Image 1 (cartoon, rainbow, N blue to C red):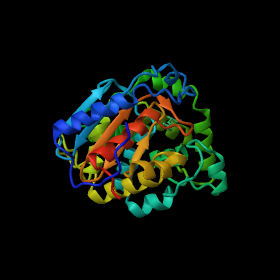
Image 2: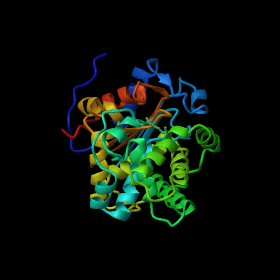
Image 3: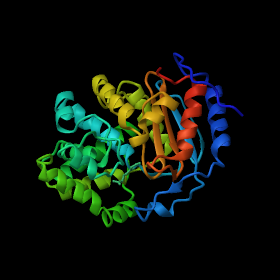
Image 4: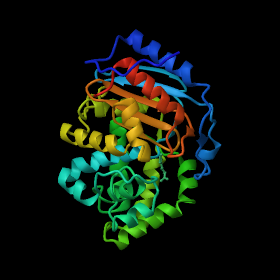
Amino acid sequence: PAEPAAVSTGSLPSPERVKALLEEAHDRYRDLDDGAVADYIPSLGRADPGLFGLSICGVRGQSASTGDAALRFSIQSISKVFVFALVCHALGHAEVSRRVGVNNTGLPFNSVMAIELSDGDPRNPLVNAGAITTTGLAPGATAAEKWTFIQDGLSRFAGHPLELDDEVYASEAATNQRNMAIARLLQSYGRIDVDPIETTDVYTKQCSLLVSTEDLAVMAATLANGGTNPVTREQVIDAAVCRDTLAVMATSGLYEFSGDWLFEVGVPGKSGVSGGIITVAPGKGGLGTFSPRLDPAGNSVRGQRAARFLSHALGLDVF
Ligand code: DON
């Protein structure tokens, strides 16, 4: 059946309608088998490509889920959004804009050429170079203190303590030579003034935190709600930082396909290479989706289709 056209409404439909539309999205796209599971991190290559979970959380904490929504997976690049928000909260808008940048690279998330083309500018916090730079800026005198700040902060977005996936962490730590090279290159340009290898290790840990789509929906809804977690009612970041974070997601959340995403879905989003995506509808709520088959930029294929359908059907579009 044809997909509904994009519309923008003031609030989410009734809980019954939201649940029915989530189930419709799952039915529509669960047999889509385009794309491939990421295998450059060996442990991710073992994921079941059939998994598909969808969750939504509104700004008043109302939630619904369908499919593999309680299953946990490593958050990967979606962590970059929340670490940026926490560091922006700690350092301020001007400092992160100066030290990290906010422009799209138009190149893959782990591009070394992007750094070279910009004389060492990491460009934005949602590619690996900018994310590693941002992690290095986290408050704390040591890597261990920075890790505590990040794990605690992401847990506050989710509303409960997030655990490390030891297997994914070990697998990525054994194969992350490229990220270590990126960190060293940034150091050579004077862009990282802490230990680049320790910083890459903290970044690798943040990517290995376990979440479900239910968690991602609450984390996304916190960004939709001006930085206050709608379930715990804790203000995790202030509203101005929340706005800065959404602006960066709009320009760079789906890497070199960020323009396609904004054109199709009409709200900020962020993907991760394990197959998760968050979609944030300011003032309305957040979606968390999970399905491991990815497009060539590293974005979940089913997740993108489900987000587009739900954005249109639920009236999420900001335009
Ligand atoms: O650094 C990496 O390559 C991974 N830990 C995260 C990459 C990622 O999720 C990119 N997403 N689409």
